[in-house]
Image (cartoon, rainbow, N blue to C red; front, top):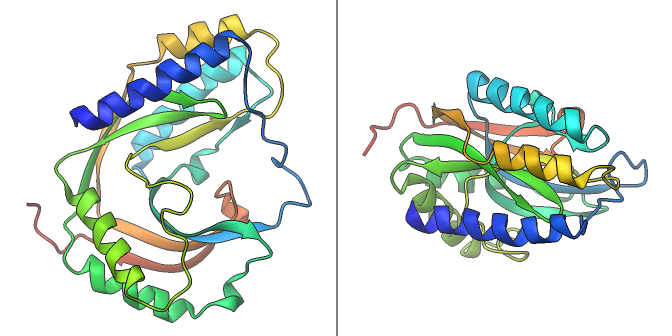
Length: 233
């Protein structure tokens, strides 16, 4: 928990310095009809109450920065692991979906439900993230077992190719245009830095085909896996 909090703090401090210099990394692909990046992800959805709390918080940010990309409630998610990172031209008909499902199922059998507390926000130069704090080490165990299982398989994957995922964040805002008032934006997100957004037990994870933004209309469900029959450790 301390390591995770330190990681979030480091992201925040580095990004805030860039924001103060008006150095926002803008995403040129948001809502682009030419964006055909696609991939495969194992993810979890926060509870409806947590998503509602996040959505209400985003409304406050939108009031001072109205022209950015705000994730709708339907798209809010916690990435367990990016199995195939999105890249142009990939489609699900290029892989054996059942084989991926079998690998995930073999790992899920030994994983208990995940308890996650969501408190405050942090940032990167390109987005605003909701901070998630898992209770115990089930999420780390799940990720490490998935890494091992896919590395021992012959299936296409790009796990950890971009970076090794260690956090339990939910991406909530992406920057797509210059901010008219960076000062008001910084003041607002600083005000929200430690807001409690709720806790939930995650009893189900989803394997999906997805675009870069996990937009509901572009997500293709592959399989759902229940953690509910396992006892919490």
